[in-house]
Image (tube, rainbow, N blue to C red; front, top):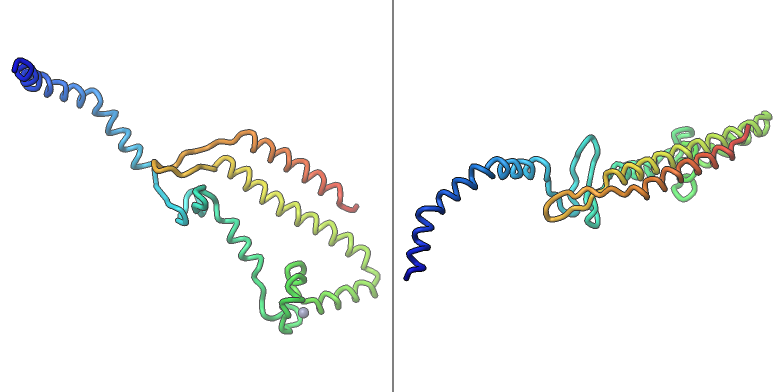
Length: 192
Ligand SMILES: [Zn+2]
């Protein structure tokens, strides 16, 4: 009985006072953290696609990643029905490879190379192709590795609570070293 009286007294006298104290003291902090959650946590689920900072993002296997690379890959496999040079119908099994390299069909490439041989420009052409090929490989490699390096900065894992940034410093340094070594190697293959 005495206990009950004490509890009642405590409730009446102090609970409201405590409540006021807590509200006053922690009120700002509580509303700030609510605001923070609302502004910065955009929760996405597996397979969602959204735009942020001019890039397209998705979540695959629980990891947030940039999908701009996928669009580039799609572009690369585009293959027209007719050769832009001789206007003949292209044969995918034969011409695709040549089209991706030279933007015309296999027959056109044969004609072109025959012309170069008979006009004495073959060697100069080979050198140019070799160097341009290396430039292309280098450009592609740089784009790829720059994106990988950037992904190291942007990589984050999605949790129930939203984004959790994860910084992987050692992987980034390894990629930077790999970039430098590979570019140096490709440069050394070029013909003067
Ligand atoms: Zn053609």
